[in-house]
Length: 183
Length: 53
Image 1 (cartoon, chains in turn cyan, brown):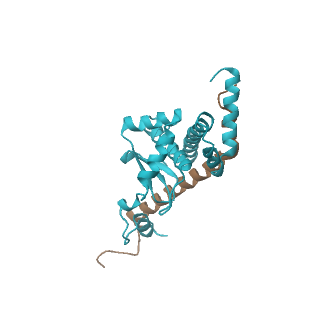
Image 2 (spheres, rainbow over the protein chains, first blue to last red):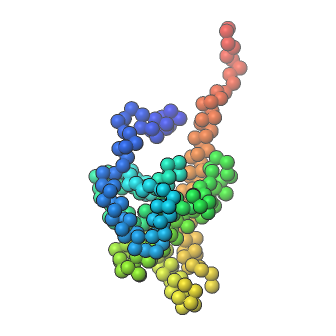
Image 3 (cartoon, rainbow over the protein chains, first blue to last red):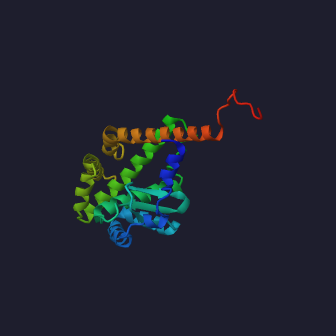
């Protein structure tokens, strides 16, 4: 595909798409449910407080990408295909990931690396570190909501997303720390 | 014992490869697009083309 075709595709040239149409029809309901649940976990509450203090806006978009952070706009988004409703546990896990990515960026802990200026190995290392950190935050939220609040559906959803072993490993780590009195 | 040793080990074993693959593909795409833009901005010199002839 040539450059113009790529740009046209990216900009949806010639279609009726506008930025406003990217917002999911059920955004308000999805976000209300997700933030209410996220607020019940210690990690999630801290993320929502961070968003509130830094003026980060939350959105639900109707596209395919899972979640992310738009630094230029100070917005985090989670995505759900148009016409579908998002199960609350998945929205909670996505929102936790998106907010952590915003926190990585805004606190300079794990800023998004520049693919143009960095060599491939350094770029990949940095992106993997960000991914691991994001997943750690999501796993913490899932653990807290399930073990502390008894919301077991969120564990099932995390398993469906392919993170069963990660959750079990985290749980074992917490147990070990409790035995050692470090948590 | 290191904190979250099992989590770290499981991520490194089971999930980091996918993240590496995705990041490498992204890096390659960015550089490919960058190279195309450079080519559009600076057309190759054509010694057979002589302006005004």
